[in-house]
Image 1 (cartoon, rainbow, N blue to C red):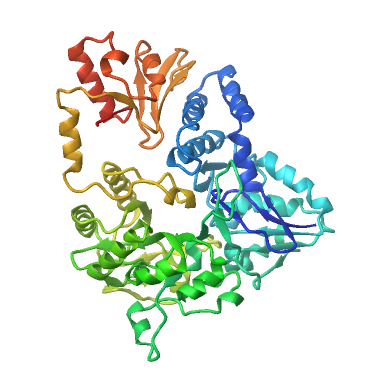
Image 2: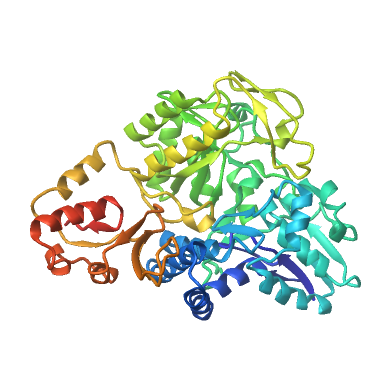
Length: 563
């Protein structure tokens, strides 16, 4: 039996279609399924309740109990379930583990996945998924061949462990987008020296699937960002139709596509060849929105696009090109009418996009929403493929620099450009923008495919939040319930480790953790359905009750139910 092995840590809301003759061993999903099972959750909670209380153990217990309370809310793809999974992963990682996990990311406790020496050290340290790696490795002895699939650098510590565990008599292959891009460095690492690195392997076709089940024929095919897809109407005979696309990847033969290549510009027919004719979602170039009819014809249901800045007449895409806003808006309207959801990611830190340009962008998004949902912000990275020489980014001159010498697995390259955020200023800006966006609508729990399927259908228009606040302060005193992403948690000690029984409200969306009065918390902990404040907080005098509810609503513990 030939085993196609998917190491942690990757987007576990996706499953691949198994290539003919191969059996998929998805260690990443096996790990996540195990840790959120009832038995594993109970064991993890019990281990922290019975051990001496420390700030770390109580923080982990808070996350575990909040995740347990929220895991039954919402649908299988819903953001609340995903936030609960992310909380469990965070609680189970960190010291003594060599890695820290989030829903969509992995960080080394010491070092970076961009440095092979750090990866090698971490591969020998404890990890929350060690049990799952060992279970997968037991199957290697009977395998005809083992193929490790590397999508991203976050999989490197576990992939190195699995490669080392593969018996010498079993052929070992390594492929996938990250492996192809960095094979020269990876092939020098001890555990990969005997492996065969494969370029001419077709890319996997992914489908969105909840952890609780497998994908079915109705599941969306998902097109990853790495495939760099642009959807366009077929070019006319004189090919002038392609000129408006600017500098985009050249079309390829979709049937002959191999790992490491990109889709580039595709017609609807070419996209259907790649997806097998199934409905799909995923990442597309921004200008694809202007080719709305082509997107609909291709079977698109969810389009995820990136942008760097927005102004009155244009939108800047991550390649630096400005696209006509009116043209994109017309396409977006056609897509909405056809039931296509448009999700955007804001790339912050692009060359020449300073704080003033970001403020103009935020104002433009609030005044006239272009996308159904701005899912979040992410730092801009200059791709390695662009780093051969200094280049311009639209009208901003850019000087690229070589990555640090010891970063032999660098994902991007540093650059210098005037009027550009960098370093600490960039991190502060990312945090501030996330907070401001979240005041309008919830952001996605992470950069995972399932998070894009549902959520806000459009940003709140300017002034809507003020209207909500005015209604909240109205004297009609509407019913209240717990915020969708908030849980009331009882701990045997305080979060600083003091031996004192304590209640906390923890919101996994906003990150708010609020100490609660032990007399009130039990009354609120089960408030999943709307109830009048007087019914829930009857022991609190009315004048204080209104003020208390206002505070808890403002802290995202409670929400008011209108209508």
